[in-house]
Length: 279
Length: 182
Image (cartoon, rainbow over all chains, first blue to last red; front, side, top):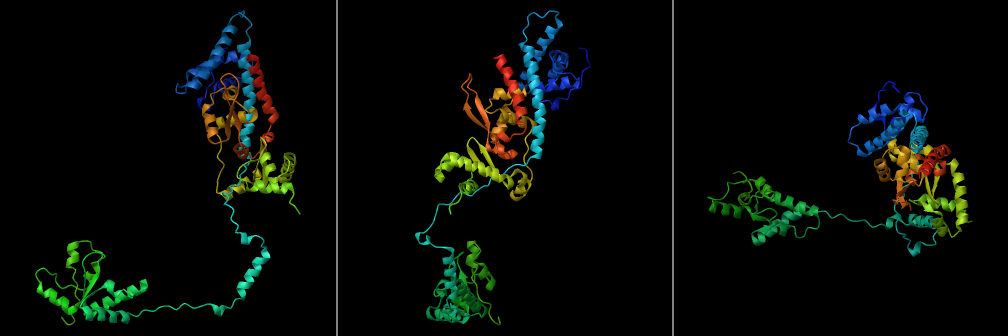
């Protein structure tokens, strides 16, 4: 029993039986009570070398260690006190069972590598049945008939949708008329007859055209407020009468930029006048 | 011409997203359970030559892809590699598979080591399921493998477990010891 201590690699062992089996195999012994006794010292050394962080595992090792100590103590006595074989037989048989199990585990491990898995079809959740009564009793041939009927229809029956065209002149005239009538107007009033976004854009272009020609001035008091439109001469009069606080003559750009500006003061100053032709 | 029962059952199993029991299929088809069972056996034999596998456990049936088609099905599903079980998990699973129903104590007796963690892992992955409590002292929970287990290993049923005889001999050997000690 003074056999040399084999080097024990801790990491690969999973439990006391695993360790015990390895120790016995390393000494090329069969699983007998005697060989269990022979490896008791190594097993105890292994148990002592274990960390104590895994309580249940340590307890399992200690239990086997106790069984081994019991076996060894009996082996050291010339006459065993009584033939209580169960402790020895139990450990021996358990080890034999484990040995068989380990051999078969090699099979299972390989089996996981070699065998392919099966996959289940993942059916979508069935939708509630929807079948209008009229659909019942139709055959695929009816579908073909329906398609033929559609194809037979005359193409020239189709109506054509006329595209409404908007001319900028329409809005130039409208602004002119509004200014002539009341002396002032607003963009909202200008676009009253507009029926599409495109038409509103044309109306806005008409306002810009008025500015370009110097025929009008525009003013917007706040973000999203109505754009007020005044005749150019009226605006000039208002400007000169209040020259102290009024902003210096500005062009089109500030008026257009007045919309995104949130600063009240800036919006107020953004009184736009058309650049005067020839000064 | 009415569709043969085998074909009807194949259609049902194809659409079902869960295992169907013989009783269910008998109810749906209006045929005796005996006929359904016979048709299923026929279907199982016929599917051997095809890309499908009829899995069976406890009187319930599930239609899955053939294990040999696994690489292609994985490519279709965009699954690169099958998740593999660790050695301890595989050991525990093997004991449950061959021994079932197995209690924690029985598993630990064979493995000789605490198996709480690996049991939790297997339960979590639904490879095993906790069943009823055994009417013995301590009323331990009995564990069984699931359809997920059959799918993981591409098995038709538990009877297809490899080297079943050898494993059972090894495990019942352990059981004999326990009976002696009791």
